[in-house]
Image 1 (cartoon, rainbow, N blue to C red):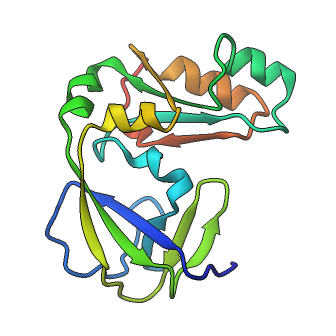
Image 2: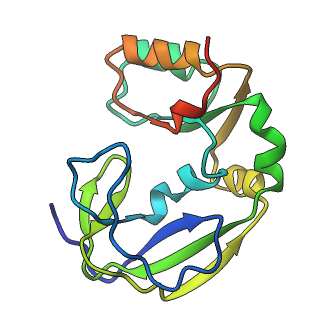
Length: 177
């Protein structure tokens, strides 16, 4: 893991009253140590959603193969597409989140592709900011937001390919086929 210096990291929550962040184990990773998770500014848009909202993030870069451009980025100039199920539209449009800001001291890079950082120590936020108008925030960042009735076909297409520029979040909350 590599260390960052003098940058802010963030944690998004629907709760505005967290005085400190105590390392905890992830339910889906019982073999992983207890940590505090944070995200960098370049990737924070992946959390502009209600906590349980299933979503798929696809990112284009210079290494994206032509077949993946055709399959996942056809008919768009956007470099990032986030796809969610249509049933979540109202919740996303009404959701207010709280962005907790941390100094990067004590955090280590965990996943550069996703922008994830971890700390094994208790972390006190520097400040808390209110984040509303999430759809507008996504648009301002140049993110293409797509809605679909069911995420399963996109997930299956991604997993059947060798495309690496994606993230699948909270899929256990997606509709079944």
